[in-house]
Image (cartoon, rainbow, N blue to C red):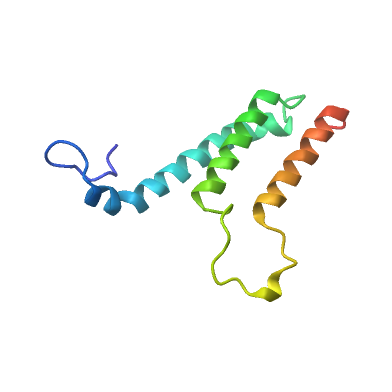
Length: 108
């Protein structure tokens, strides 16, 4: 892993963790996106019927990205006038539920 700075001594201290957090976060997002790219054709059923195993993996990947970007946490200092905006988690959950319903109905 050539992008992580070499650490001298034993272990990783809190200071190194704090300094490396943005880099590690970017690496995690990059890896999750690669996994999603591998799963997406199977979820969409490009080569036939969508594979439920890949759908479960896709849900986990999306869930991890949601937590990484803190989309499930309320946005601080959000204007009261934005009350009719639907939180991203609700949109993603609704979209996954619709996709699952379509798979169960055989309309995919």
